[in-house]
Length: 433
Image 1: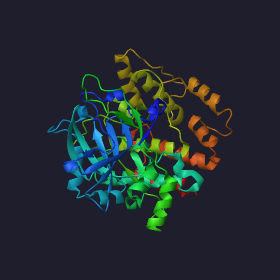
Image 2: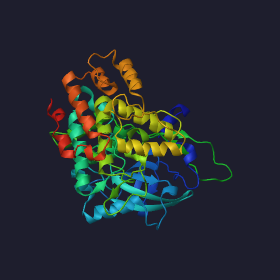
Image 3: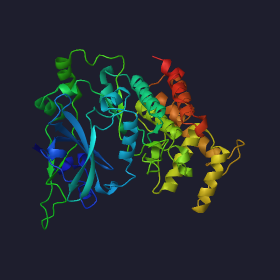
Image 4: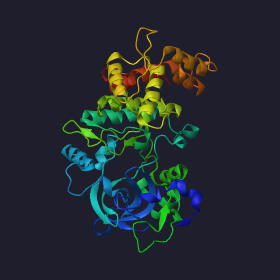
């Protein structure tokens, strides 16, 4: 292990998460699972619902490297019937999916689940395939190693598979789409250490009054050295990685639902990736997944969110977000407009209705035009903020026009107006080199 100072705490999870109902205190070298099958080697990352650890599976010589996710105790209750991770696992089992066949369809599902009792409660743990970084990691594309558009195609195909088996992901975004790395399982302990680095740990203040709810130290999230990994894989696997297009894997089905049941969560997706219908009380659907796909394509291609969120509460965020959508997509349709008015009145927040263009809008068209002129004035040929961003990022005018057309049709106001996944793959933007 390598001890680091407090300046590295930004790479660690918040210490206050370690309390009753919170996260499980875990240390390098800990043994997890039945008979201590999984030995903790490093930390891969953390999120809202738990921590993911890089582990060595001591009983599997073929695929020894696993990712073990330990969820916080408050989100799961042993014996409860509505644990989403276990409900969606029943769907995978009914489809006779294994982790290996799932990866071929560009999704990652658990090898197994187990329960872990600790000082902060009982935690559901998921044992998952080890994967590469998020597809948003810009180092993946340096020196032309991987084509962004090829990654976009694989992302769409992953969603195609999920929807074909009637699964709505509910939290589809770049953070939950990882790159598959063939040959990773061939690496020995020392090589894995060179790829992920030594565990970096930051000491925690000594326990008080015998408390053991906190770990002795926090572990920084490891950074995968892709150059080292490429070198090792080339030596050990030869041409194993030679493929026409890279493979991705969609992860995190905690907010997913199947047509046979609804997720316990209305949505897990961040507000700046929400489909507009979420603001009107609608639940996750295949159409909201497709809207999130449009946001994901924007992020991959431009390294920017299509719409931003501003405000201190959900009402302010919604107003800002929907206004930016109008700037790109045009006025909000009447049906949604009426729903918004009804929602806004109950919160004492009535939006401006302007009939300049014959349609009601959440902001005045004069304000929209002023915003457009202010942004696009320095980008010749720009039609709106998002289109201007495309040109500003170096897209040709033709490609920017086609990409803007793709996004408008993928993120249309009305769910029924959004392109189907096959139509997205066949859009002219994908035909361009």
